[in-house]
Amino acid sequence: MGHLFLPRRRKFLQRGVPWAKWDESSELGLATDNTFVCLMENPSAGGNEAGQGGGLTGADLILTQSGSVAGASGGKRVFDGVNDRLNWTIAAVDALIANANKTWSVIMKLTDITKDVGNTYFFAFLDAAQANERIALSIQTDDKLTLNVEQDTVEDFNRKTTDSIATSTEYYVAAWADAGVNKIRAGFTATRPTKWSDFATNKRMESTLDGDFTGETFNDADLPNFMSLSNQDPQCVDASLYYIVVSNLTLINNAA
Image (cartoon, rainbow, N blue to C red; front, side):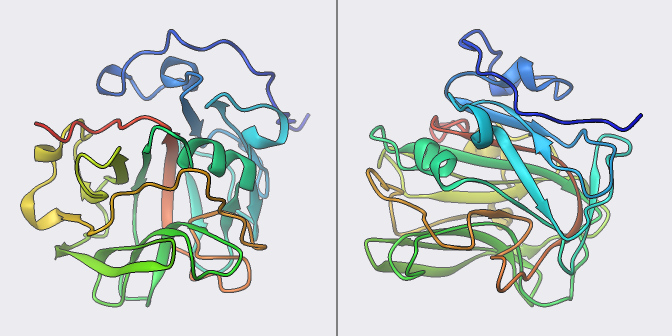
């Protein structure tokens, strides 16, 4: 019998373990009303994924696949770099990113990242005009991790790491904001990051913008995308994905 993945009812999840102590084996371990966690678990090709947490309910807990993403094997799903991607709801992204505390984090764990294929995106959250609000993390043609952000039409595009991303390494790719204490930061590392210094200098970057999206909406008609820029202009990453974590908290300690 096939596996049927349905939205999970919201639970009161305030007893989740901290990001630094999470064992990466269970959504429930890290998920709280502040933090959404989605492990790649659906073994069915073309199947959607249901996460937990973030104070979300119903459809907002679902990452809807497009293309025909391979079923989960070995704790990860392979994305083909052509059309495979995951869509999320506008309401979910707005709830966790456009919050009044001005804090947020997006963390993804991946491996087998194919390079030298042009501009491909780990995630992209855009407004309807694609000209006012934006958070997008990608690999560009130079194989550098690249951050493009925009707040109220003010752009800070093409922030890059000095180092390139390797192909076979398991990487944590992250972007986050901390209420304007620092600017938006991003980076990649082969070990799970819990603080700014966990990202080597050549593998991290800082924007000129502070990540305050309070009250804004990422309402692009193509929906928020993981592993792609948008439905109309895919620019999909060819990689294997273990999980996605999105929080309205700053999970990376910027002071250490």
